Amino acid sequence: MLHRILFFALTNLLIGTSSASAGTIYKVTSQDGDKAITYEVRFGGGRLMDQFTAFDPETKKFVYLQWEHKGKPPTPAMKVWDHRTGETILLYRFPDAKNPLPVIPSIDAMKVCPLTNDKNFKAKPHIIVD
Image 1 (cartoon, rainbow, N blue to C red):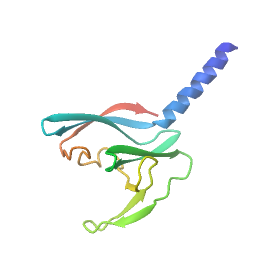
Image 2 (cartoon, helix red, strand yellow):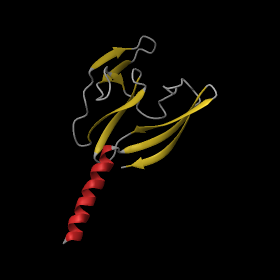
Image 3 (cartoon, rainbow, N blue to C red):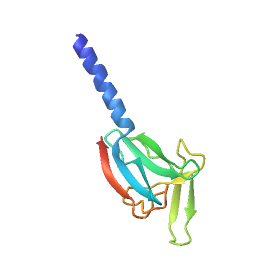
Image 4 (cartoon, rainbow, N blue to C red):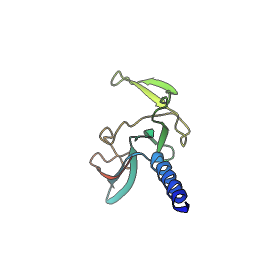
């Protein structure tokens, strides 16, 4: 009986942990002059959670907005029209950011490292969580 209780508790813990960071975690290496900068950034969701990723220029950190996969996605806080492309950019409120930010949809969409402005940064899938 004790084994079943421990198995149930451990299973719930693992499910809860994996849903909080579902998606792919990338290891990014970027150059800042002669200095190499390495960090991790998460993109995507999984079976239980979906997630938006953004970069907050004020705190110089990546921030994440998560919601239940079966739930309603967050609504934009505001929209901005980009005069260079004609696109309307949706901005969302992220829990760890003061101001609304645009979503970075994927690692492939990130063309410049936000920490160093390096256009030749390298990103490799580091951990895949679902």
